[in-house]
Every structure is written in C-alpha cells, then in structure tokens.
Image: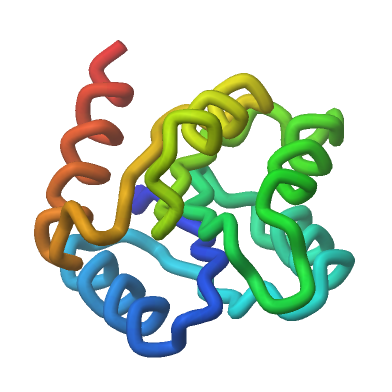
Length: 129
C-alpha cells in the first residue's frame, strides 16, 4: 500500500511540483497551502498521513506552532515531520528538531527531484525496521 504524505507549503509551484513528483514515485499525496492552521490540522486528522512535509514560513501559520500542535495531539504525535524550509540557520534547525521534527531540509540545497529521492530513501529505510 502506498505511503501517504501530507505536504504543507505555501509556494504553489513547489507544492504542486512536489505533489506531482511524489505521485510519480507511487506516494499518496495530500497538498495544503497552509493558509488556515485549524483547517490544516483537521485535514491531517481526516487523511491520516504516514508522513508530513512542512514549510516553516507560511502566510497565516507559524511552522513551529504547527509542529507543537501536531506533536501535542495524541492522534497525530507519531507522524514523522520533515521540515522543508528556506530558513537555514542552526537555531531554526535545532528548534525544529527539539519540537519533534524528524528531519530538516533546506530548500536551496535540493532540486525537487533530489528532495523526493531523499524522502523516498528515508521512508524505504524506515519500512525495513
């Protein structure tokens, strides 16, 4: 069965590029532009993803708060969160990981194809455990 990935990203080109590439790789993908924090959390609950890809900089939502809310919710706390952000300072990375993010990726370091390959490898390796 295909793994389900929930992407929260406000850059439409990146969001739909990731969605298309992940679908080609046989992932079930749910995309959200992260406009309404409450709505995003509801959608995560109703779709029950296996993984979440989260941008930290969203128009009306603080990415750090989103991590806190996901990890603070009993029904969501075990979903691994992959941060995909333009923020590249160590404080941001440390804070994300301390709040419960599983991985931290800097957008400028990867093309969409490279990022999807990294995600795929992580998920395949986790499946072997």
